[in-house]
Length: 249
Length: 204
Image (cartoon, rainbow over the protein chains, first blue to last red):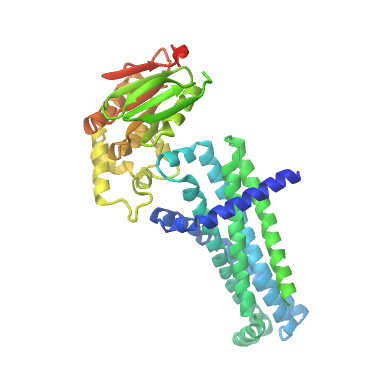
């Protein structure tokens, strides 16, 4: 079990090294098109789900905290920033992306593998790994911070509006109190964390999609494994960044 | 049939060796059709992948070798312009249209073909689309991998007629048909050499 785990971790790291060392290939026009497609599929297409989730999460959390602790309390504002903005928004955005894109990427690659399209690409004169893996990995690394930023903005706006409606306070006052407690470096770190998570999810999905057996069962297997391992990666990175923040304080 | 295969370019010839002994010697600048008959699909795959390792060879499988998830036009774009700074140029597009016309496709069909996914084309048309890109950028040796399996006689005649366009356009570029030893293997018109690995394994 640990040997299999070590082997898999080694494969992820190899793929990460490959992606890092070949990133200049994304300057090619045809790879850029693939990158934009991946960003569209992962980011833009996820916005409706993200919007609804953020709207509800922000409103519920802000009203609950206001009711329990009080909208005036510094603790409420700190919890909104650290809990909602820094922790929950990147985490929920990553979960949505894992559920949508990780399974999609892994099964798409597994189908291509089944139909021997990696060989077909090579015969077209195109390095299959560059063309298929780089845009997916970097597409997720770019799209997830953007999705996270949208989640944060929508969740905060809905939280402020909900508090305004329930407590009858001016919106600008509530927003001002929140911004007094917001740390711009942590806001930036939340986006960096999302970028790392996106890259990790992309690497895991690409590995499972492209390295399985060539069979129909392998398609569902790749999707299941990429989602399962992707979820673990999301929480591991989240915990690691939280530990880093705690250690720095 | 599990003897080690190796293909090398010697001068202007491609030499295929099995267990160190040459079993196919193909001139690379005299053009024409050549045929290699093998006993089974596994051997055909090994032969094709061995020849593929030689620089300058191009492989055309029976499926046409296009990616199913992108349109025919995107496949052409990928095959012709990967690594270039610009997208497919007008000149490439004109050459492709000319190649598809040479393959016998009508102008309305050519216009529609670009937007279609290869998976939705019938087998002959898919092969023709894959073939057209080799017409535009011919390799030194074009290997046509098991084209005839499962085709009707009419389809075979039609595809051989399409393939003839390659020899008219590139008279000095040879084409090697790798076929299975089947009782319904069609005749290849003007075939310059026939190597039967299925019949004479002891020579190789």
